[in-house]
Image (tube, rainbow, N blue to C red; front, side):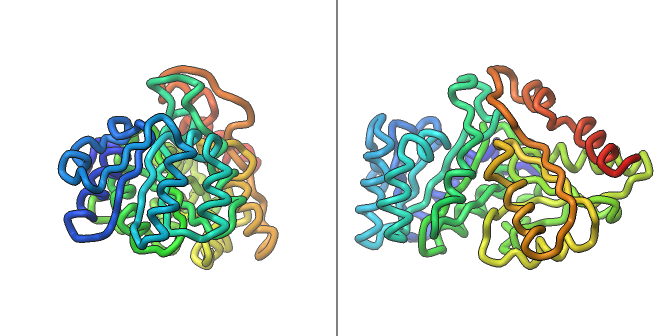
Length: 312
C-alpha cells in the first residue's frame, strides 16, 4: 500500500513526525522547501525551519554549526546540488569532523530529472559520497522505505546521505516493511541461476525482469540493496554466495555506485562474475519511463542481459 506519493513526501512526513515525537531535528533548506514537499513542516515548526536561500554551500556549513550544538539537521535539496556544488563542505566540515548532519538528495538518476531535464539529473552522487569516510549511504526504493530510512538516519550518530529520485517512484514495499539494517531485502527468490541486485527506484523493473526470466525457465533471485558501502555486508555476501552470476542494476553512473560496491565485495570475499547495468554516459531530457527504457533499465533488457550473460 502506498502511504506516500513518493520519496519527497515521505521525507517531509518523517521529518515532521520526528519533530512531533520530540526529536531535536531541523530542516535546513537552500530555497528547496517546496521542492522537498516540506511546506507543511515549515508551517508547523517554523522554529525548526532554516532557510538559506540558493546557497547550498552555506546550507551545509549552517547545518554543521547546528550539529556542534547537539541538533540533528537534515539538509534537503537536489542530489547534485549537494554532492557537487557543496561537495567540499560535505567533505571537510561534516565528513572530516564526523558531525551529525543528514543529507537528503533528490532527483537522483536519469529518471529523477523528469520535470527539469538533463541539467537536473544526477548520477554521480553515490560515487562522490562513497569516497568520503564516515558517511553512510541509504538508497530507499520507494516512499514507504524513505520514511523509515529518515527515521533510522535520525538515530545514527554521524553523517548520512539519503538518495531519492523524482518522487514518482512506484511503490514496491508495504507500508510497514522495515528499512533493512542488513543492507539487503530479497524480493523474489525463484532460484540461483543468477542474483539480480538493484538500488533505489529501479527495483520494480528488476522484480518484473525476474518474473520474465522465470517464464523463460531461468530462475533468479531479485533483491534490493538499500545501504551501500555499509559496515556489515554479511547478508549481502550470503545471497551472493548462492550463485555464479550477480547482475547489478542502478540508475547511476557505472563507476562508483552499486556495481562498484558489489564488484569489490566479490573480489575481496568470494570471486563471482558481476555484470553491471548502469549509465555509461550522460542521458538526455525526457519522461522518466522512456529514459529508463532507453538507458537499459527496462525489464525486457534486464532479462535479455541476464540470459545472454548466462549463455541462454
